[in-house]
Image (cartoon, rainbow, N blue to C red):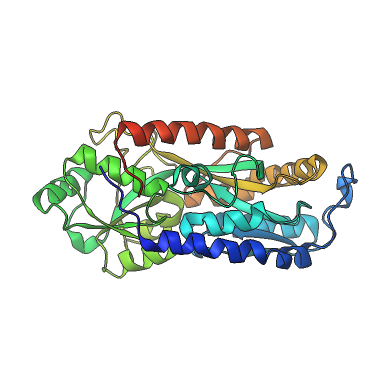
Length: 340
């Protein structure tokens, strides 16, 4: 298999230098950094920003805005969400990695932290050394959906259509080339035995709009981003990529049930901060975010969207990033995926 990189990726990376040089805007927003050992009980005493490195409207954006609203109520401080999409999340990731480590700039991160580390060329940040985890907030199945007009109702029918018209069935890639969705689709193409026409997008929102508008036939996307449109009949859900069904869409089968016994993809999303952030601040944020996620009202809201609550320790995020880098490196090698 081969992943053909778009020039947009390299152009996006070129923008990172400007983001990093402009890191002063983060400093102006955050104020002076706390000294190590500062009493975390005084945090936060000014607005906090959550950077979402994806376009608005996707599952990560929905999660970030839910957390931001609940933290605003809990902290009695403004918690704002800022979308910084581009370069498969690397623009937003780098902005936070080089921001002041005072707890006032958070990153809504996930699988891209590990996947970007495997891309050709050197990233202007190190996802292991420059960031530290706060909590893995949720895990998500990926969901294969199609536009109703495509005329397929099951995964078997979709696979048959792809084989009948190789290279003609269009499939949106919400995370762009080299994303978790792209790798998952490449593996899916391999299992089907025929290729789809893959179209990269900067995020779930724009991809969703084109599928809903009938401009693209199908999409593999985090379940939470598509749940509402499946329920109202605007999209047809064919299968989830996890070995378990989702509580949000219990009638949608797994790909394993559809015949792909060894096909499993599960993504995650959570919060990270610059590595220089004092441990006391990290623990304070973790404590409050975990409490928010475990509130019955919040948990029910997120689970209804398709998320599964994880609410882990900070260490779990760092371990996941390191482990996923090793895992995806093995998958890329075994599937002969060429990142260019």
